[in-house]
Image (cartoon, rainbow, N blue to C red):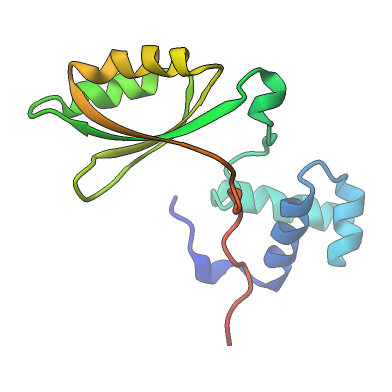
Length: 154
């Protein structure tokens, strides 16, 4: 079921903002912060999940802390007739932690985590026969993945 941005009321918005700050907050504390009873807060969460407004509760891992000190953005342009094969290949490479299919000259923009430049070469070699790539190493991320503005503009 597609979610409807118009169906998010002020209480839903408050719930989402609190969860964006700390998705591990207790139900009791969430309820207090948004001015609801615990059962009402639980019902709000259930409905937000049912409507797929909330798709998952997850963790934000630091790749360097788990052995991946380098990150890269790779633009991928499949060779003629190779689009679907390259898409499957990208999905199978575990170091690719995020990938978007895009318009324009490139078909995919992938973010990957790597331990070394040699590892990057090995990963790129997997797609080299079927696609052209253009790689940029990530120096820093001044804007981390974040929620879009939730407040309604007046």
